[in-house]
Image (cartoon, rainbow, N blue to C red; front, top):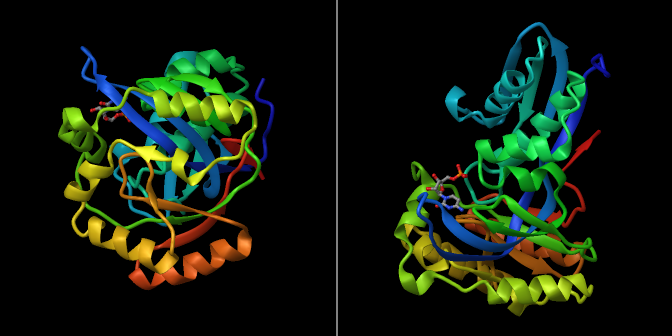
Length: 293
Ligand code: C5P
């Protein structure tokens, strides 16, 4: 029996990649990764209400139906479980799309969890994870969120203890690169590849609850992102000058983030880098991938 009959609103948190090392290309066309991933408070909202059929309206952004991972998640769960119910889904986009912040993947993971509950289908986490990876390599991470060591194509996850909360600033220059993620993976040269050692070393330190340091952060897409996104290199340099600290790429970019000392420091940095004309948001690390409001 379906458990909840009234609408619920879920927050779908974004992520940053504290490290992202690409180890090499696999026979199946995907790349082997080693990444330290962390959810942050920047979030979309997903409202879920009972309905006869599945529908999804999106506010804050125009999304093509076939690119809407929430609809794809709903159809996949329905096909897999044979649930006869529908759902009226309303997605409020606040996380910049296709920026390297995992917004769409987080929405999809929240949809799986929310509908598994609404429809009373009760799939256990590992079955939801099997469905999640079919929607995207980093969707399984968002089923739980927090801090994780991500390997394989993104689906092998080792959960780490929650980090002491950190404030950060997320800067998201817009772009119009079609099939961005595939394009950036395809542009990697052998010199961009890593061996995963820096990621494993950071995972080991976080396991021992040693605080994160600026020099722990690394991203194998840094070189190709500068070439692929027009004017990113210039914006990156200016952001670092205005903020007086390094900015780091998240995912395959073009989103950048900087660590802050506290909330006030983060607000000041956001104010300064906003003069670039791109969205700059203050965020903090969170221990979860989604939360019902
Ligand atoms: O899994 P997802 O749909 O997010 O991946 C989008 C594209 O990014 C893939 O089609 C593939 O080209 C590339 N990719 C990759 N290796 C990964 C994840 C993604 O090459 N581990």
